[in-house]
Amino acid sequence: MKVSLVIMAAGLGSRYGGDKQVDGIGPHGEILMEYSIYDALRAGFNKIVFIIKPEMEAKMRELCGNYLEKRIAKDGSPVEVAYAYQDFSSVPDFYHIPQERTKPFGTVHALLCAWDKIQEPCCVINADDYYGISAYETIYQELVSMPAEGRATMVGYLLKNTASLHGTVSRGVCRVEEGRLRSVREALKIQLYPDGALRDLAEDIPLDPETVVSMNFWGFMPSIFPALKDYFENFLRNEAGENLKAECLLPVMVDAQMQAGKLEVSVLRSVDHWFGMTYHQDRQVVAEELKRLHREGAYPETVRG
Image (cartoon, rainbow, N blue to C red; front, side, top):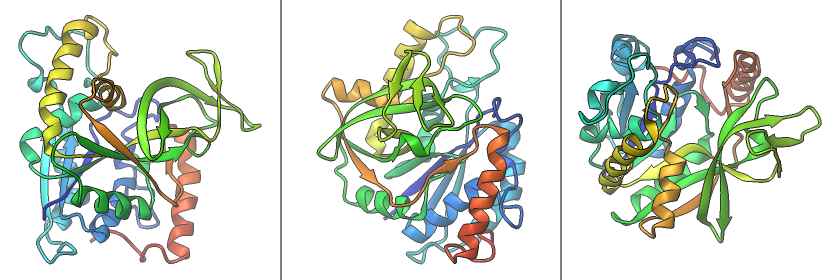
């Protein structure tokens, strides 16, 4: 059975101060997404789809794609590698793109750009996050048994483990009941304080550190794509306007589908710790965490090749 890992890597990394997706941070210069790929392949995934800016393809092939095409998946098949471009060529003609806009339109747009590359269950992730070994094992098992219509899944993480002392972060704040996602709200300015307190600065409300949040670790069936298309087109018609920073986000789209009764989402838990690089100051912490994981035997000397 074909199951794909879809890596959203077209972001500009503006808060980080560069293209964090291709920042070599592992002991041998591995980039963070190479750990995601390694974990996914050992869990059973057999296809990798990179969503990138067009000008990144040569670099992505050099960093990951070329050696992945020589890898054999857990089921004995060659690993399939595909590239999708997130750029303005995929934006419908009815929408006029503001002349000054340079950023893509967010994660719904990103996944929609890969529609022609995905005909199988898929796990969608950020390129700059580390999700943990067990997360891939858990979501793979869910994907291979999930009904083709009306279902999705996600791995949830605790808010206290996903914030940064170096600035605000955006997270999908979830309400979970009996293993099912009931709602998800995109909080765009969450601040962690040295005493462990957390606050949504945009809404000026405190947040429970034990709150489950989405880190864009979604599991979808290919039947999600028509809904993505409709949602994105409605976003362009009714919300984007001339806003140069307007983004169409997966957690908000998933919530809309749930509230309309069109989607049921299971929430999975990982025993591993999430970490990521939102700000450049996070880099040292991530590098030390990766060294520890190699030292403790979670990974071989290198996850590359």
